[in-house]
Length: 235
Image 1 (cartoon, rainbow, N blue to C red):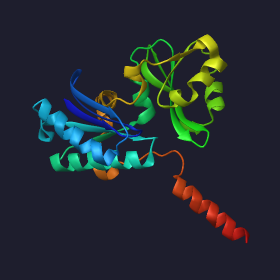
Image 2: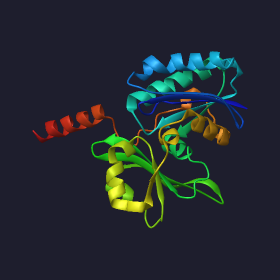
Image 3: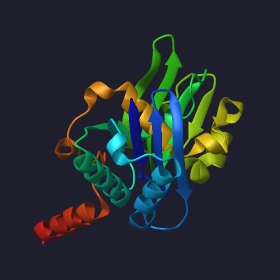
Image 4: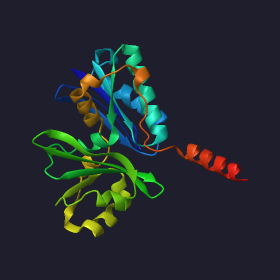
């Protein structure tokens, strides 16, 4: 089964095409251009380079969050358009789960962290064991100290995500030799992981109208609106 995956939940824009366990192509760009500028040209170039077309895709997978509000909307809208044009379904994939899936069969606890600003990270907790890949703690927005406390008594913890660039030194100071960090190739979002989880969870596929972003918390505009209303009510 050919699965096309996209992730635009952070500054990284990434698209990939897999055929069952075979990676056909993957393009990633971590550069300061908006996703509206780089995502579709990347998709078009990737497909042309490997001689594939959208019509040949059997299933789509897209990262639905948490992550950048604007980035998620662009990525989801892009996949919805491609799926609609080809009449195919989409599998929604958690951004954090896909980040953890970058580290297959890792023996340690995997804790992806994405910078959520406002002194918080988006994080979850994942592990590979005899049951396979599974979630230990569900996605949430917490302080880095709460995140580290959730690591519990696990001897070794591997961190991945753009939050490492912000909090890596602090994590190392707090956890010492227990803290490990994913290598560059596995540190940030990879569409091949999104596509692989899409294939793994193909039974969850649905039509585009049913795909919605998973934000965890309200956007800045919504928070400012709520604060304004509180102020007005107090007058």
